[in-house]
Length: 257
Image (cartoon, rainbow, N blue to C red; front, side, top):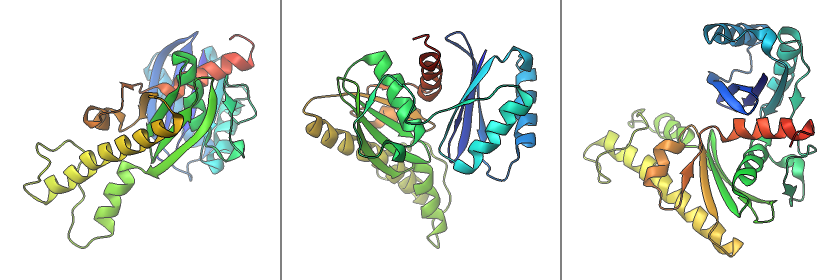
């Protein structure tokens, strides 16, 4: 079984693959002060509850955009799972070409998403990842990672309205019944949900113009299922795209793909 771990700024999303089948997936809060021992307790307990024994873990792969936690998870996997994890970087064979001046500037999660999406669709793509930041990645029909755009995430925008204003409350990120809000909460939800759908559509449309074609648009990340129904451009939501990419990259590095 393969232990696949994606360390993001807000959440650590991880899963267990048996062959190419995702047997289970979980989400933990990212906390830079949590130690390898503390994370191991969480991982081992969750696996036990799922009926998966740690001795059945045969290898591990880690993608991280939080440098301080990369070493923590490296230590955790080595100590408690008895394997040295493969750490994702732009130097690995991912099945895509990186047409970017400095590949090491790109978040590993963006590369993993691009690799997974291109392996599945084999066409020109725009991948929208709704994480701590909302990222847009463009991949050519020949599998070249071209670059993209980065916007504040939906959660960041919501928190900013609450923390940077005197009277606006903290709101749940849910779809309001109307665009014209009938109260403050409804107005904020409208601006956030419908506003972000508009942001997505505008950036995707502009990227398609630069690409010179209508790319296939894939969404992933924690808020993808919330925004996608309001978007005119998102065609499919793949909630586990990053985990799919980690499993794919692991197989490529082992010569199995």
